[in-house]
Length: 271
Image (cartoon, rainbow, N blue to C red; front, side):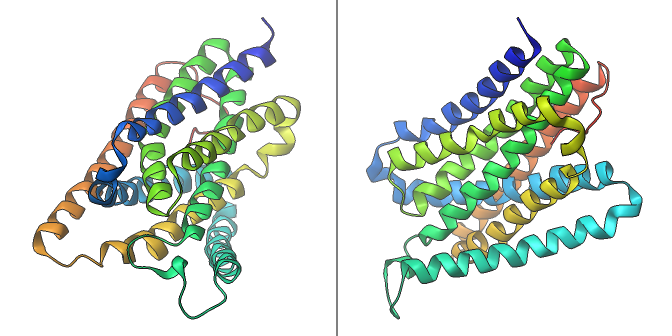
């Protein structure tokens, strides 16, 4: 089997595993969603911030090198401001009056769901590049890297799926968007196969953009929604699930690093 075929198969496997894991939420009856989804949002907040600060940003800075640190951080700032403008445009598109469904307190506005899809697509695209880089280094290393990427994507995808449902998307539409964003892993893998050297210089800034999207969604959309519940019990539940999201992503990332350290290193640090 050709190297390109290996890359295609394993980028597809990684994306599908993540989507299937997120789709377990479909097994929960819809009338339970108003009670359970806010808990998923708390978990997603921890997962998104953990991926951004413990995974994407360190990888971006390490890949760029010390001399480009300021440029990478400037890209994060530009990304946060850019996502603010994008969300503002999406809000204007969805709502042309003082009151509309995008501003109800019961759920996020739909642009929050759109932003999570965009950020996830960027992140998955980078994962595809890293999987291709690993396979082009060594076949065994490619398999190990693919499994490691899937391991840290699964908990994040579950949180993202919960955000889409909370944003008002139907279950079928949320699953379809999750599936579409996962396909960017395949696109990143194929593009890396044909032009890894050209993509390598842009990789730190792609990682920075993915991190900025997750930070913006967490700070602008998730945290304000959690503050709507002020009881001590709700606060304790939120803090517990946020910490659980951070710990799970940290554990998955540390396990991925441990597995990969047992083999030859990849030329680019995995996200």
